[in-house]
Length: 340
Image 1 (cartoon, rainbow, N blue to C red):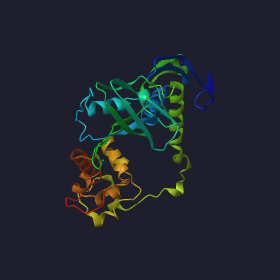
Image 2: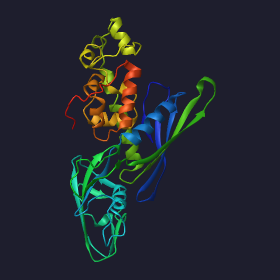
Image 3: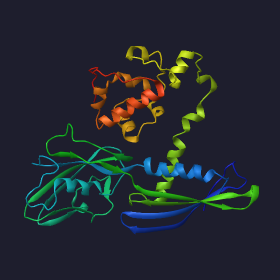
Image 4: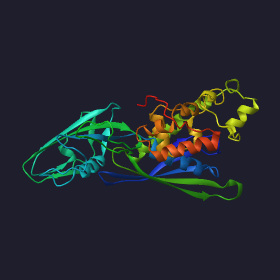
């Protein structure tokens, strides 16, 4: 039983694992009880823990694979039972455990006939396969199949496209999520003003982390993320009394600003989080080094559509959000800005 002293209750909050089992090599389960909380606190903690467990805990996965002599992912190779696309899907599902944040390479060279599994892949020392029997491909004839894989450590789900890839090289939509699912429940005990809450948290992982390791990692992330707010001082926060600027920031003005006028109207410290964009559009902008609202009008609609994995739908979502929140439109003409 782990105990954590908190000033929000007259009792110390206690944490305990009440059930732990390995359902398979790639499915571990843990059930934890945390108590006591004040009324309403379980939902606050439960929602935060669930999001942090699924989105902030890092995992290792295959992000790219290369096949020699293959033109596109829907190619078929004589002597191989699956298409290249099917093989990529199987590689995507391989559960890996890695200790390094560096990009690693793995290599598989197998001569058939043979059923190829994760155990046939030569992995770097810092990476290991959770389940060596995990299926990859079936070779039906006496031919050799060589697969070069790129391994990275990340968090969440990453969608890639094949633009800019070399011949025979195919990106994998990596699932860097060691936590497969999280549930929490609220249970009341006591009565009247003495009513308290108990929470049961259930976690399923892919075996690269145990449930208790996952909940510990998620907790650390939740502690680290709000840390900057602890050091905010009153003198560091400035308030503008300019009615025109306030109107523009509130989105109540009907004026449309062009690129040259924007710099004086928007604070460079206003981040794109305030647009409340869908996750895919938000992540693409972050990867393109677009962090503030003031950065966006530097990209026309045509420029924006060229951002990696950023389609027309995302352009429309950003344009709509800019207009609704700040009454600003993306330029329609191309600005000839270099987009990586």
